[in-house]
Length: 368
Ligand SMILES: NC(=O)c1ccc[n+]([C@@H]2O[C@H](COP(=O)([O-])OP(=O)(O)OC[C@H]3O[C@@H](n4cnc5c(N)ncnc54)[C@H](OP(=O)(O)O)[C@@H]3O)[C@@H](O)[C@H]2O)c1
Image 1 (tube, helix red, strand yellow):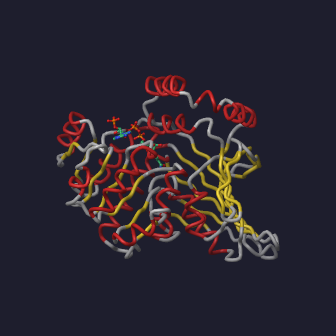
Image 2: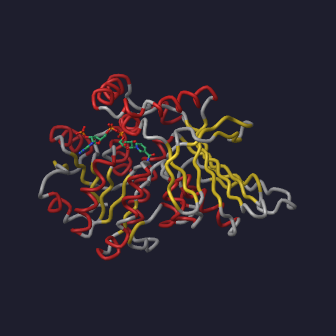
């Protein structure tokens, strides 16, 4: 992986990704805007480091020699645009680990430009959205007439600073769902439902997740909702936060919350990385006939999965193994629905077959 640049490599998740890339025998170039942090990391990993400022007018010249860049610098609302613009100029494939739906939507709109430039735009190669996107594609293949998709996410095992800062940035901006092909702004926690993540029904609320863009691309399904497991008391809290949107969007409040995040959060430790887990649930329904397919995908700790999936995706892009098409792609459209099962410790279970008259097949597919 000599021609891979990892940008934002010294942040919490960037460090995991750079470490994984080197452990797999690669020699990526690590980069970011802080010269000292880059040099320290490059020395420790025995790889080349580069100081790259996204606001620099010479940004494209830094990307010229690379076949692909993995952007780990979030919030991606700030970093994806300049890097993608430079990648279009230099013919460099772009990957990132965003989960932010506006970023997915923005990159989707650059599909034509990416095809013209002969590059792949592949955002979301982390826990958001690899398992959910692959599960959605798997379910859509089970029920090709399905026209509604619901996804649910249950995860624990600690938050990194960057994830929490990204969440703070989007607090108070409500939610989003896809209806008949259009992204619709809705209030936070707009819908609730019970979801069985494997231990019986649990309360879940809608969240503004990237799958409202990516799963539509991967499956062609145009009505999509994404839920997260949350205690029922949290629904009211989320709605209240929504009503405080005007306050949260004010700079001093956002700055204060981010400062709190910076002092309190450090990301999952090695034990949490090794022992944490998550479950992604999905359901595709044919609204007219009521037929449905339902499945669950269990994964390791989301950050551990992100490190592996981001590097695996970059390797595939660089090797051209799957002849990934140019233009905007999602993990499933680029690599197929089984990509998630090639990652360590993942396990998929089909819990409801499309034809209700047929006994649900409890097929279990496990990765090594
Ligand atoms: N897809 C997934 O499942 C997944 C998993 C993990 C994380 N994430 C996302 O990845 C992002 C990073 O998370 P993290 O835990 O690694 O956070 P982190 O430890 O705070 O690291 C963030 C990194 O991004 C850099 N950065 C931020 N804004 C920048 C800008 N405008 N220009 C240049 N560099 C910038 C930071 O550099 P400085 O220190 O110089 O500011 C730092 O290297 C978050 O948005 C998080 O939500 C997604």
